Length: 78
Image (cartoon, rainbow, N blue to C red; front, side):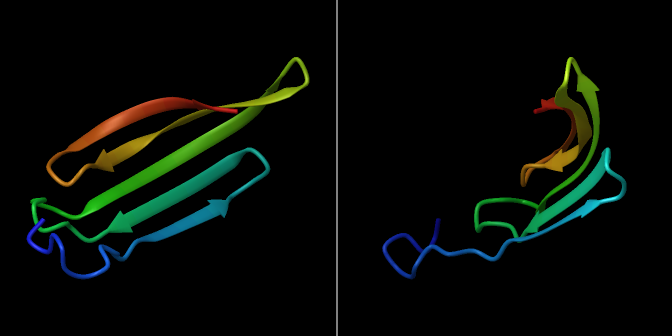
């Protein structure tokens, strides 16, 4: 970035997680853009947990902006 060799390199970051029920979780994250990024980075995720053979497994999905574009995502949670 434009501060190479100067400063600490620390950047602000914020996140919130909420357990809506025993099985449903919501998470949001945000970080201001780095000097080389076009937009604010953020993520909004929802997770649904269920039991499979005595183990907790979940499906997670949402949207994510990586500083340039926003894309949907889906994943597994263990």
